[in-house]
Amino acid sequence: MRVRLLVGAFAVVGAAVAGCSSAAPPPAAAPTPAPSGTPAEQGVRGQITAETATTWTVTTAKGKAFTVTLGPRTVFGTKAAPATAAQFPVGTAVRVTGPRNGATVTATRVALAKAKPAPTAPTAAPATPTT
Image 1 (cartoon, one colour):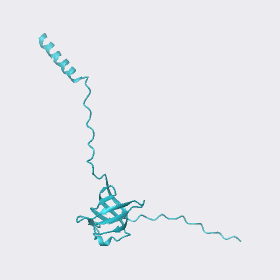
Image 2 (cartoon, helix red, strand yellow):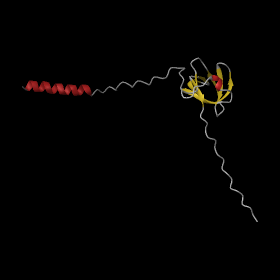
Image 3 (cartoon, one colour):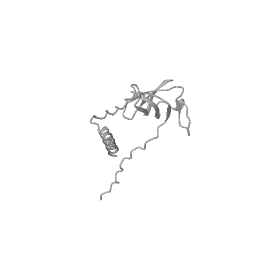
Image 4 (cartoon, helix red, strand yellow):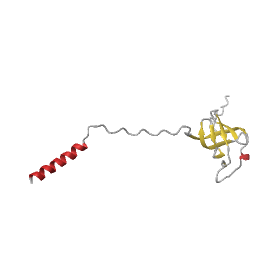
């Protein structure tokens, strides 16, 4: 009986010691960086400032110009209001969706940009005539 008790005690102590390793845990795997050339941003919003058959230049409100590449899969307008490329002349405010790589956007969709309300100027108080 004593032998069984002694063997059982050694088994418990052995399991406890095995779980208390002094070795440091392996380092966590570093996050995998995105493959090079993967666009980090999507699309652009601005005004069309130039057009050719397959590319447009869209300039943002901050003055940065982007080349927008149009292809056979580019959709114009929205599901509710489909459009054609011809309905987006130079000067039109647009929202272009698609992968962006540097200053080039490959357009998957081009839609009219929602107009932002113009800031209202404070009105001057009417002048009070003096007598």
